[in-house]
Amino acid sequence: MNREVMTSLAWGLGIVVLALCATFARSRGYIDSAMVDRLVMGAVGLMVAWFGNQMPKRFVPSTRARQAQRVAGWSMALSGLVYAGFCGGAGQHRGHCVLLPVIAEQSACLACVTTAMR
Image (cartoon, rainbow, N blue to C red; front, side, top):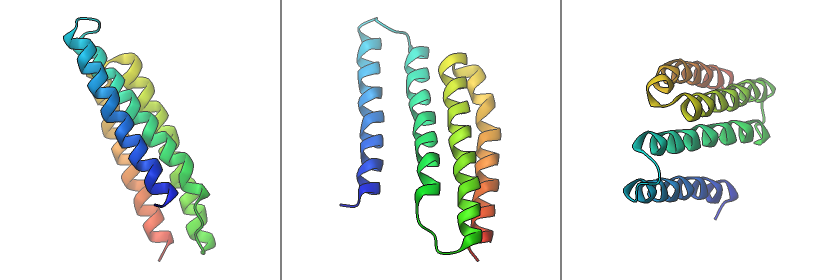
């Protein structure tokens, strides 16, 4: 299997295992439900940052596409770290207000990358 596919599967499996372990700890009374949400949302933010860090390292033949991919990678990595920080530290209610600007930023970067690859 491809290394990128294995990394993606590892991230997905890791988040599922984290969610199951956190749910088990919540059922035993060790943590509350807000902590479960913060853990899982923080892990998702770190996953976005990881994939954003990996984006510029992929080979693209066009110079403009490489530049766009580099910008999109930086944007994705930084927004993933911001999302993980807000969701992990601020909790669910304040963390969701960060989600909309992050999604808008990701959509803009995806449009830039798509335009540059034409």
